[in-house]
Image 1 (cartoon, helix red, strand yellow):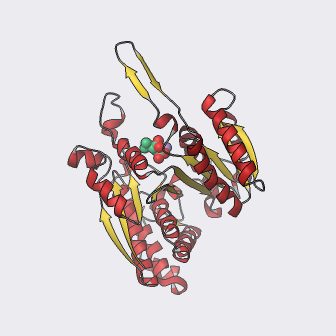
Image 2: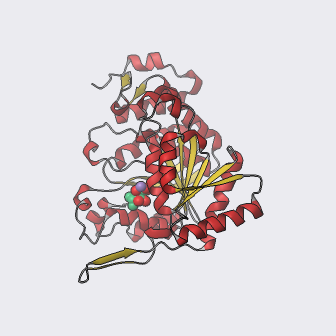
Image 3: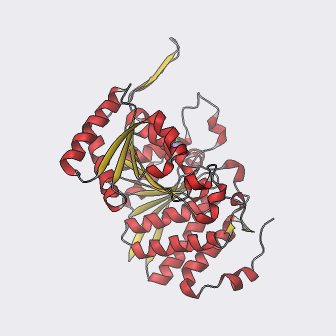
Length: 370
Ligand code: IPM
Ligand code: MN
């Protein structure tokens, strides 16, 4: 198959981790006879530097014309501590979500047995965690009416949702639950917020009418923050609004031991986008220490979305095999520490050679990082 992929590497470690995913995708092309055509675009701080806009029209055009979008990371410390900055890298990502109609962000959280010891939780609490967060991505407080009245010294952000926005993401949540463990937990703050009461009412009716066979329960977001730490195994699909999902997905992302392992997908009315959940890690930029696994696994999610299910499986298995051999970037404190590029190389080799791959002979020729 021939596919067009928009490549938005972004800032910081974005380009480094994207390069590793591209190597792995190259091995997939060869092994399965596909051809991927890449169309790069600037986004984030790099786009501001080059064009003045965090999301230039040219980038949007490339995304709209693509079969899928592979995204690295955005963000630059030079903008973080300036509340008066009017142009910010994050606007690139938010603008892209809105313009592409990417209304659902999907973040699977799974654990790797060999890395469980890195989890901040006790091993027995976290072993077997397998949950999926479905975060609404183009509505709520992120996109509602907002303002900052400097003379009067006040500011506001409005959380606004419509029934159809809630229903379309609910449908996805229930469909995922059906192929998983058949349970959806709606996380909200319905004891305080009207918009949360709308979510609860809408999801309850939608579920009763369309998915009576799926278990649906409700949890207030403060309690959910606690339950994710105390009993994370109880969750299957967590369905929630934009802001709550932003916070809870960062919380959930540390359960497996490293943020560097988790991919995500944003899907909607147009082309879908795939990105690691970690940020641009400015302190690690150019040091060859970033963990490329989350981006490589995002590429796997991307392949799944373009009907390359077997290919996605090959990538996931390769990542698993590499991690199980004790190989990884330094933050995993692995028995065989390698750089970002070298981890990318070895996953690529496993994908390329399949069952013929031998870790022993490969590693005999690789020098490990300190
Ligand atoms: C995320 C990020 C973004 C968000 C930022 C960079 C705008 O934190 O993808 O979770 O808040 O949605
Ligand atoms: Mn976030």
